[in-house]
Amino acid sequence: MKPGEHTLTAFENFMEGIWKQNPVFVMVLGMCPTLAVTVSAINALGMGLATTFVLVFSCLLVSVIRNWVPKEVRIATYIVIIASFVTVVDYAIQALSLGLYEALGAFIQLIVVNCIILGRAEAHASKHPPLTAVVNALGMGIGFTIGLFALGGVREIFGTGTLFGISLFGPGFQPWIVMLLPPGGFFVLGGWLLLFAWWKMRKEAKDGA
Amino acid sequence: MSEPLPNPGAETTATTTSWRLIAALGGVALLCGVLIVTAFQSTLDPIAKNRRIALERSIFSLIPEGVSLHIYAVSAQGTTLLRPGQAMPKEAQRVYAVYDAHRHLRGLVAEAGAVGYADVVRVLYAYDPHQQAIVGFAVGAHRETPGIGDKIRTDADFQKNFVALDARLDASGQALAHPIRTVKHGSKRNPWEIDAISGATITSRAVGRGINDSASTLLPRLHPHLNNLESPP
Image 1 (tube, each protein chain N blue to C red):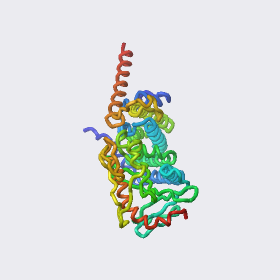
Image 2 (cartoon, rainbow over the protein chains, first blue to last red):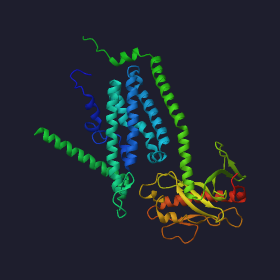
Image 3 (cartoon, rainbow over the protein chains, first blue to last red):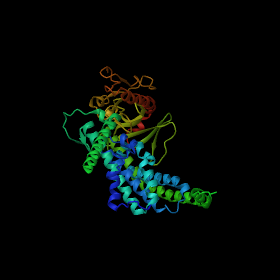
Image 4 (spheres, rainbow over the protein chains, first blue to last red):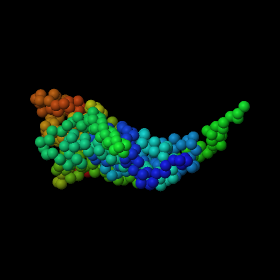
């Protein structure tokens, strides 16, 4: 740690990704799966948990080997590590639920190039001990899952009138198909970003007063 | 004159030997290789079991009276029973022969696929050789637009097309008497036509095209050898 740098407590470290640096609502990272797979709450949760698994175990391994891997080849090793855990999660989802695997499609494999994971490995795990790296990665993963679920839940409720497949409004409900299409993803994401920005401004105004 | 500032990057590069770089990359690759192979080996059986269960569920949903099935390879040379693990011969089509509790053939299920709006739409269709008609279909993997193209799974009117879709062979037995085709919504006049879903015509056409391509090759090859499939082996 650099002199004068504020040391985060374990709780602050964990909460970074959930609130202050939420990957979806604050850093606006990983937009490819965020917009593409969030047509239902279960898809969003599945993708969020798969990404969290890869994030936590990749950061753990990157942190464990950080003193042995020369910096010249670090990016190559991170990518190999991330790709390996994505392969593990790919097989695990196929073994657990073929339906979820088919719903998530190519986006499971595309976790390899999710910038949140490589970003955490490079910016945090490679500079911190394993426990700190895991706590931070877990917070980021949960923050990402919350972000995906916030989108997936809203899109499923308005797009099909259900949540986790359970009908909410009865047979008379006319689904808003646009919510399941790409523009619907942008609308809902825009709405959540607006809400977060408003919340942040309100908090800053209160703190300043 | 002041001394040049030290270049930390150059210093690191000079002290990191090529062997160390190769050893680091090799070590990580070995570790990751072990991880991947372990995951692959430990999930091989559950994945195969899941795929088999999903396929059987789809097949028996198309022919509810069925209690057992056998897989045949159908080619220009005839039909061959495929044992578990046996490879499909080249140029052959896979057919699932479904039998009821009395060991009578209740129907045949085959695979079909054609390019839809986003990607290939894969379907299974059930064929009743006694009626010479397609009597059901189920959608497999697809990437069609949610809420539009994916209505082929749920649209009740579209499903009605496959209650008894005419797939008779012509007098020569070498081709379908009438090619199966998808027509514009509301303009179905003949039993070999599929009434498209309004707003999802491209996906509906893919279903019709896929079934027609599959049936027009499969059924002429299959019919001369149907006696071989009438009871389970």
